[in-house]
Length: 522
Image (cartoon, rainbow, N blue to C red; front, side):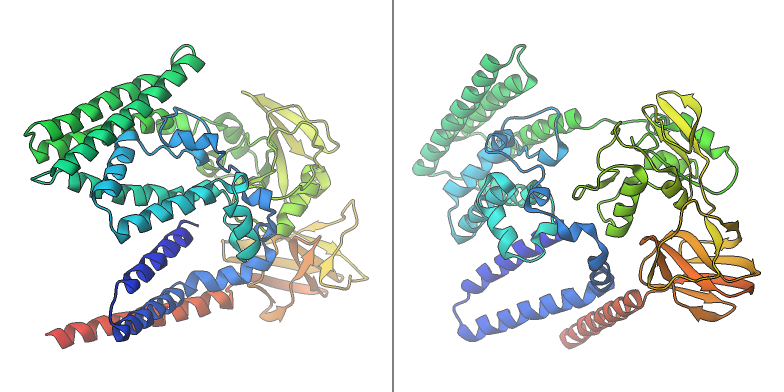
């Protein structure tokens, strides 16, 4: 997502540079170079773009509504927090720039006005309008006009461009402020800007003081920063203060200002404290026999703790989700799949959800951990560990199992009959890209692997390739006749290899071109 914003800014800057070219021939040459750069960038990114194109039809992120894409949009009132420090809240809406940065950026616009400065100003204005999301006019319009833009959730993430452009403008302002000689007009402008900034800062601080008691820390930080900044500007314009001292003080003010906000927003934890979240339940589950997954409707088993204890989860946080898995987990978790959410389940700690033990069992969920009591058929209470209730799933199925079927189902999506009569089978090898299973069948059957169906997987039984069927729309299955088999599931998608080959060719071409240029110069 950030890459898209950076590419957009880079293209706009390149076009601005082209407009500065007076020669039409050179202009055409530079435009051709731009198109070449874009082509090379796409080819070099093929190793990511080609597999992404394969995944898109299966992702639920491609169906975002404007409201879902515009989550955490900045309100007009939120824009004040670009200059008023906040010490907590929603991280996606953290847009604080700092008073010193804003002041130096204004100086950069006023004292060093040219086409490049105004370009940065326009980028800032357009980005602010975009970051307003559903509260502004630009985001809803672009969502309708630009295909795929809705995949880029959370409009305030574009604030990266505002921070970048203001940093450039602030650098220009600091350069202008520290020139060896300041003219009379420049001194007057600096003084007026300093006084105006101080007036605004003190007014905002006074407003906060009147609205909030006790006074928030932002009141005092704004007042102190305003006083120090105007003092520095007046010393620069009224005395012979050395430019180097001005640079050091302004940079220190900006660093302290942003550093205080950073400290307020950041909580540093020792590893022991970080992995203490859910540790009691995780330790208990790690001692249970067999291969199984765990499910928590309340995120009582955070992913980092589960990984530390070698546990596998059916839930969690992942912004890139397969739609068929999200829908299946909704039916298994007993909640309504309403729109997109980066968390599964989307509402953590929903006490109204009624888990379906049988469908959770299809996912090889052997235990459920929740922050609240659960009453559901098939879930047996085991322990209360800390704030977590641990349940065992009596209807859990193995990671791989065999369903005898004298009348094999037709179609690409197999639906099962509950309760499921099955036979466990042996897993010989289990890695992310290869799973090997040994099975002995006395009658025809369906081998079901409790892993998510996805293109790129192939199945071979005794070296004979077999088609993989979707089971309940989500899992993998293959039809087997009576006999003894070694079944291998391998993940080797052609899209990855094609993308890798294209990117490798692009890299070789770039290296060859660079070598040729070096040889020509020598």
